[in-house]
Length: 370
Image 1: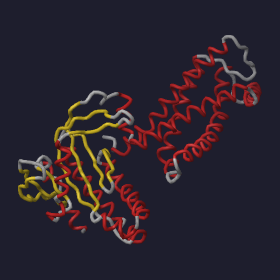
Image 2 (image 1 turned 180 degrees about the horizontal axis):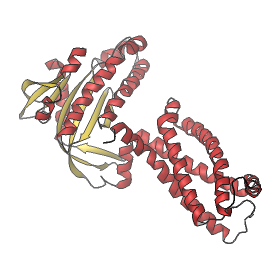
Image 3 (image 1 turned 60 degrees about the horizontal axis):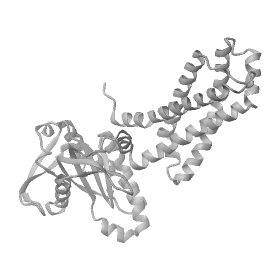
Image 4 (image 1 turned 90 degrees about the horizontal axis):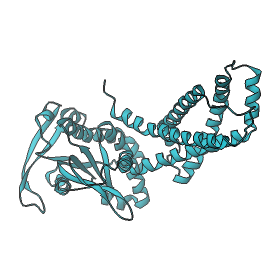
């Protein structure tokens, strides 16, 4: 059974916590072992690193880091979503430090019992535990965990701001040298955005944009889209184009975005006095993808397909449709997925010499809801 895109994305966001904690844990363990070669630690509080203790420590580290990652991705980040970057880091550090302190208080007696091969309820274990709490080893452990926590939270915040996929591409160097690849692009544009901004003022309009963008997120994640750019009230969404399934995903994403806005009609009307609507253009083709920039690195797409998609989207008002697509998007697969494809004629796009057949796509179920 295939993993849902949203679940897959969450897993990809959680796993880096385990990797970061494991690497930093090994570094800390190596450092401590190197120091203790010439230092006599208090045997009543220190735990010797045996094979069993090492395995347990790694297992506990992975479990705890994945738990922290899950809490962060699924709950805590949303809780502090409206806080600025520095406040989010501070609040989260306080929360997780208290949480991890509790974890240490639970796992230390277990590790001590494994090392001494005695019962968890032995007086020796709890004497060692009390001595550990008041020792330099405990302070060192808390510093180490706090540093791992800070690094993983910092990574997460940077990843969320520039995009997890983008950050991973920087790390792997996938686009360090430009490559050619086939991609699908959807350019979306809010209808009457200039008039709306003038009527409600810039601050209120910005709040509208934040809600509007947020309501698109689930559909984009669900259908494996990637946000390429936010340009004012426009969003550029992209898909890798390896097979026709991705074309179907792009079309399904458009209609799901429409439905998600429709579901919040009363909310938008109550909070902003209007219900935003949008139009979109879809096109597919070959682009060159690569890192660019001296003062600020960015992964960009270049190619005629971007200009063409923008021109197609610009004709939506003229043709009185919400969705316009090129012939590259129209495939036999689409007609089998409750879509009706209507030809809109052959048009010479602005700045182009050759004409392009354009189509609009309607979803029967969506039309009935309307």
